Amino acid sequence: MKARGKVLRPASSHPGLLMIAGRQYWFSAEMWCAAGGPVSGSEVEAELDDAMQVLEIVTVDDARADRESAAQVKRERQRRLRWAVLTALSAVMLLSAWALISLEF
Picture 1 (spheres, rainbow, N blue to C red):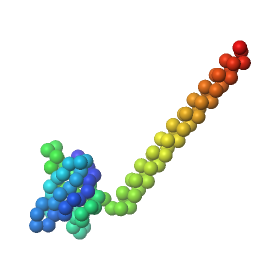
Picture 2 (picture 1 turned 135 degrees about the vertical axis):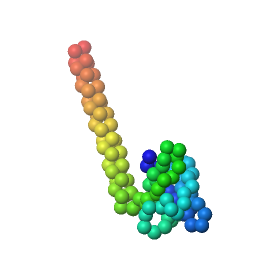
Picture 3 (picture 1 turned 180 degrees about the horizontal axis):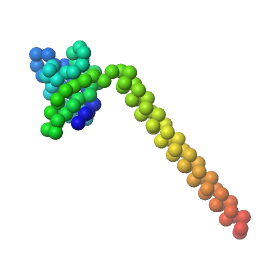
Picture 4 (picture 1 turned 135 degrees about the horizontal axis):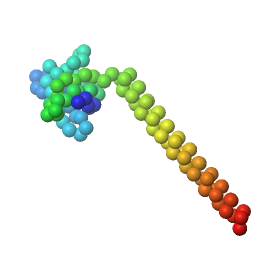
């Protein structure tokens, strides 16, 4: 299973520490699959086994994180626009029904 997290403490002579979904995971320098070493605060994607142990870690580059963030913002805007359109249509239908009822009486 792949999961996103942040490096809390890079691995050097002692085990490093990751935070993924509110849980802390230990890792060693051998698990690091990216160029260069881990840096505190960097966003990473970790491969976890069934026992929730870290198998490997790769850095999520800033461009990829920005693209994913932009896509999430776009989805949120589309969701809000759908609700606005539905609300407007509901208001128009309600006013139309009220106008038809008031004309007959």
